[in-house]
Every structure is written in structure tokens, then in C-alpha cells.
Length: 82
Image 1 (cartoon, one colour):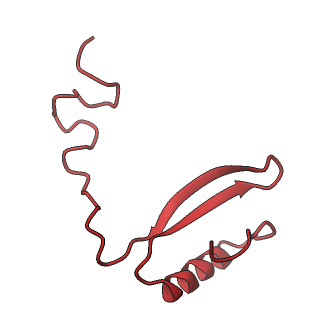
Image 2 (cartoon, rainbow, N blue to C red):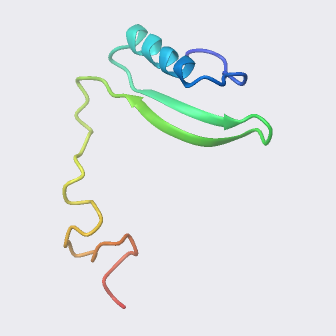
């Protein structure tokens, strides 16, 4: 964790500035942003904001996107049986 949660943040530019600062401080690390609901005290969103340049675990969307015609039948329903 780079710093404490920004519960009073109302400007998206503040979040982008923090992501940039974290990327400068840790350029070869994964950087994840987590959004919390400060009333319910739960995480409501999370996403990867930066991936290191030497990362080899990334896989493109080809072959796993909806409607690719693969054996799963597409649509994310778990199969082609109807």
C-alpha cells in the first residue's frame, strides 16, 4: 500500500496524480487501485492501473472473448448445451 485511503477525495485528478506518483516510485511493480465505500466500509471496485514492462503473464483477449466461436459457445454461460 502506497498510502492511506483517500476517503475525502472528490476529484478524479487526485487519484490519477497518486497513480502517477506510485508508478514513478515503483515502475517495475503491479499497481492496483481499490475503491471503497466509506459508509458501508466495503470494497466496491478494483482494477490494475499499471503493469511492469517485464511482465510475461499477460494474455491477450483473443481466444477468450465472448462470441469467439470456441468450444464454449460464447456468451459466458458455461457451454453450448441448451
